[in-house]
Image 1 (cartoon, rainbow, N blue to C red):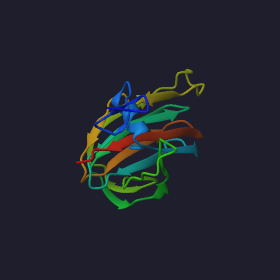
Image 2: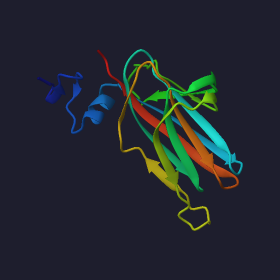
Image 3: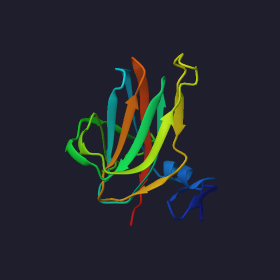
Length: 172
C-alpha cells in the first residue's frame, strides 16, 4: 500500500522504515524518559523505577556515569514510595499519542526483586573520572503487571549520572 508515493507499513500504519523501532517512532508509539542526576555522594545510591500500564512494555536502557558505578536492573521490586515523576516524552514530536507507562526517580524500595541485568560502569580514566556508558543493546519484554527498578550505586565523590529508557507498548 502506498500513500502519495510513500510506502506505508500495514502493521503500524506509518511510513515504511528500515528497522521496526524506526517504524514505531514514525507511528508515534516510541517513548523516552531521561533523568540526569548530579553531585551524588561517594557510595551513593539512586533508584529509577519504570511502571508499565496494562500492556506489555518493551524497553532498552542506558546509564552514563562520570565515575565508577554499579548498575543493577531488577524486576518486581517491593516499592514503598514511587519517588518523583520523570517526564515521559513521545519520540515523534509531531504525535499526540501518550503512554500509560510511568517513570520515577528516587523511589523508596523495601525489597529489590529479581536481579535481571547487573553492570559495572568503569572509570576509564584510571581514577581520573573519565566515566563510562552502558548502552542497553538488549531489548527487554517487560511483564505488564510488574515494576522495573534500576539501582545505580556510585563510588566516586560528586558523581554525575544520566539514566535513560526508551520503550514502546505492545498493542493487542
